[in-house]
Structures are given as structure tokens and as C-alpha cells.
Length: 379
Image 1 (spheres, rainbow, N blue to C red):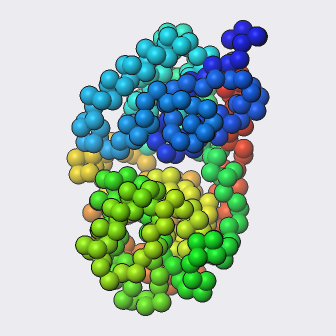
Image 2 (spheres, helix red, strand yellow; image 1 turned 90 degrees about the vertical axis):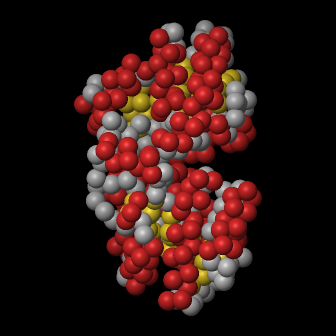
């Protein structure tokens, strides 16, 4: 970039959480460089900040090994066309946000072509497939880490990395009042709510919602005063879940608000959710939770042979010990999930909420600004 030219920055995000990170980063960069141009792939939040996506971000939001195989021809075509486009555009720097199986290959080809590359959100090399660090070093000039223990891993492998914290820790208040959230959602003020979050993708909901709804049925009989609410990411997913409610729990009284997942979590007393970013949101909102997940059977056969981390949910990984119940695959049975929720309902959760507050403080370090500092060093 010459001194008279505004920076041209490529960003490629792979799913909703990446869109959130990308939008925050774009906003922080635009404060410093109001005339900066952004190219690449992003979702609606990045579009609001000026990204004209090269193809639909949802095409990259494929989770699980078996599912990726089904979409492989489309993904390979997208990758080839994107690499050619970015090399022709010659951005000052390329930032790949998460989606490591897609982005690291793109970054490697751009780096080989002389374009600086940053990877935002460390791949879970500390958890499985540690040998990938060699490929990451070939593809990436710098890694932006969301979690404090990740930087130590890259330091050991001599790859420049910066702990930037998590933007969600900056966005979510330290105290989110339950009463306020209930008023805004028009939920009953004086009852106990269990929020059910079976995922944001169609396949996740198809796998997890039947189990979650059957558990809700049992809890409704055990605790007649308990109310249920399940926030959905879109009208399409709300329709999908309503059909599953009609099939598995026709007598269950459950609200299905759209686009209000964080507010619903703040309004709830307890949470039943899938693994992923939503578990971190739950920690930051500081509500007791049970985390349960079932993978596609083929994905799980591969994952269980390669995964080496002691936990799979972010609250436990951050704490370095099990502070929330996490149940995977066969362990995620109706009986086990119900038992874990009953224990949450019956126990004093104040010590757990204090641990959540401590972890929130560790992650709240102005992530988008710190990430923009690193990008600035490459311009």
C-alpha cells in the first residue's frame, strides 16, 4: 500500500460467529482508515460494514466431516475462484476468520503469491490434529487467538500470535438483568424458565431438538411451574422446530422467538444448549447450563480418534476443569440430560456464576481493537 492509497483488506468468514468477528474488525479498521475497502466473503453483519461478499457465506457453514464430503465439489469450486479473485485484487492483507479447513488453504496460496495473511480464531490444534501446526505456519503470518491458553501453544511453535480476547466478552454486559430481558420479550415475570437452544443449523436441530423436547416433557411433569422458550435464528428454523414440537411434544407450551437468543438466555433461569459459541454466550450472560451434543455418526467415529482435549465445551476449556455438565454422543441421553438439569435446578449455582464472572473478565480486553492493531502492523 502506498501512502496515498487507502488500504484494501480481504476478509473471509465462514459462518455466523465469523460474521460477528469480521464486522467488529471492519468497524475498528474503518475508524482508523475511513476509506478502506473490504473484499472477500461475509454475512449480513459484514455487509452492513461495507463487504460485498464474493459468494454467499452460508455455502461455507457446513459442520461435520461427513457433511463436508457432500458439499465438497461446491466448496472446491468456491475456493479456486476466490483464490484467483483475491490474487488478482492484490489486497494489502488477507484475514481468514475461523473455517480453517477452507481458509488455511486459501491463506497458503495467497501467502505463496506474496500476500500477507492473518488467521483470526485459532484452529483447535491444541485439541486435535496437532501436526497441522506445520501447515498453519506455511499458510499464516500471524494468528489472532480468542482464548488465553492458545497463544502459549503458538509461542512454543514459534508462530507469531496475539491473544485478543473475545468480542462477545466486550459486547455482553457483565450483568444482564433477568427482569429487563423478560419485560422486553413479554415473558412472565415470576416463573422459572428453561431456555432450549438445539442449534442454529438445520441438521443440528434435526439431531438435537427431539432429545431436548423429550427432556422438556419430563421436566414439565416434574416441575409444573416450569416454562419453556426456544429462540431460533430464523423463521425457517422456527418452523422446523415447531414441526418437531408437534411431533414429539404436542402438549408442551413453548415459545419460539426469532432472532433473540441472547436476550432469551438472559431472561431464563437455566439453559439446555448445544456445544459451540452459544455456550460461551451463556457463560458471559451468566446462566447455569447443560451442554449436550451429538455429531453425525461418521463424523464422530473420526473425531473420537483424533480429539485430545479434556473437554469440548468452551466454559470447561476456559476454566481448565468441568464447571458445567457436558454430554456428548451416547452420553447425551434423555436420562442423563434430565438428571443434569434437575441437579442444576435443585442446587445453589452462585459459586458457578462467580466463576463465569472471572472468566468474563479474562476475555474482556477490547478484541476488535486489538485485532485491528495487528492488521495495522501489516499495512
